[in-house]
Length: 194
Ligand code: HEC
Figure: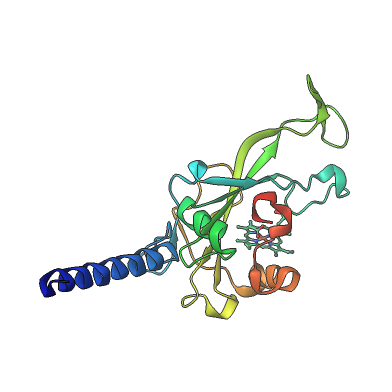
């Protein structure tokens, strides 16, 4: 082989290798993210989350909790798409993952348990938006709570708070880690994460 060609091949191979390494790093977390923190270190309310990947809607209505459910609304849960793509490949949420849980009131019920009749049968149906809780994965910033920060943007109709400071560990992270350990996400309740 001519030396020139050989050098060219070698350079091309190195360049291709570098490119592949770069792509792998980016796909594994670097540059991913929908989390923006302001100068006070508060999380800015995520934008456009209703167009993210919808992973599920747990429901713990008053009708099944003696009228005393802590979160009687639907919990609509979304993950930013770039982080979800990494999760599908690796089974791990990368730094930069944002999980938004929007609370949605039930429509007014016809029965004591809050359920109502619909053409499809008797059940529960989503009404108005009613609050926002968010989890952000950042292993450095939130190393005291297994890499996840927790934020409450208000438990009321929109508009939600524009920015929220990280909630104390005992308010949120403690219950998540006590029940699902280092994972922090209740994967068992979302078929697409299992
Ligand atoms: C008493 C336990 C408990 C506390 C306290 C708690 N959570 Fe959760 N959280 C859960 C459970 C259980 C789920 C999943 C099932 C559901 O939504 O009903 C959940 C789900 C979530 C989700 C969706 C992702 C997931 O892991 O399922 C987010 C986001 C979230 N919580 C944020 C918060 C924030 C923010 C706070 C504090 C303001 C908080 N949580 C406090 C138990 C808790």
